[in-house]
Amino acid sequence: MRIIFMGTPDFSVPVLDALVAAGHEIAAVYCQPPRPAGRGKKDRPTPVHARAKVLGFDVRHPVSLKSPDEQAAFAALNADVAVVVAYGLLLPQPILDAPKHGCLNIHASLLPRWRGAAPLQRAIMAGDAQTGICIMQMEAGLDTGPVLLRRATDIGPLETTAQLHDRMSEMGAAMVVEALEELPNLAPEVQPEDGVTYAAKIDKSEARVDWARPAAEVDRQIRGLSPFPGAWTEIEGERVKLLSSRLAAGQGAPGEVLNDTLRVACGDGAVDLLRLQRAGKGAQDVKTFLRGWPVSTGTRLSSE
Image 1 (tube, rainbow, N blue to C red):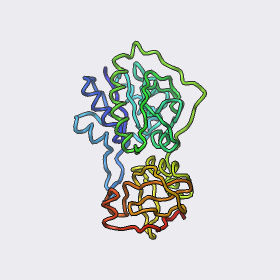
Image 2: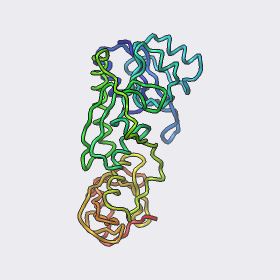
Image 3: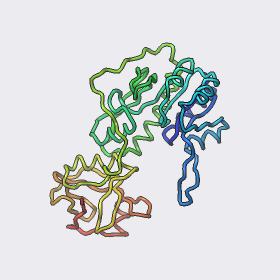
Image 4: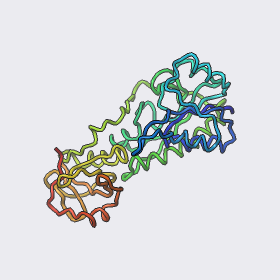
């Protein structure tokens, strides 16, 4: 098929690679514009932009698709279908209608649960046992279109958003190739009205750990916000990101360190901190972290 690919972050790159490997023709790649990044604040191409350039594709990064000129340029590509994954712009109806078979979206949830911007994070933070990938025929509403293909997968008890992200990216890549092969035979499944939830964009104000909450909630917060923005606490007045954890037995005052391997009491139960990051330093497993900064039993981690 002749495909327009629309995606921006790391999550989208394996999908582009899979479409190329399957022999599809990429008419153009759409992504978000380069933005200032790093210490020098120089414009940095997005991961999809960088990969598409390596592959030699025409890369387009309009700030909007609302203008008649942009819509005409899109339609002029004469695509069979557009494949959209974490693109970052709303698609007006003329864009949705331009390809012969419309626009297919790869969404990382079991729709209609977790429509919206942060489905992986929200699934972990809510304690969902499963998530999945839906290949959806796009329409004007937010992730409301009929589902052509869906597949579920369990969320591991120690899995972080970073780990789940990588699994789901590969899963989505394989599924969209399958969906394109079977497109004429797929029966669209209209999403039910029951069970709709929205995965709001993660706000940095959600990242500070409140140790008075139950251990299960704290553990899910830590894993769900890893790596970005990263749940955090203060240890002896210094802000530290918490990037991995697991549930543990133990009781104490909320935020109290219960042993010499950073088991921390919560409002109910405790968590073991497994991976941490001090400001200006790289992430470290707990043993390495404690070699550089021993945290004594009885220390209280701040929630305020």
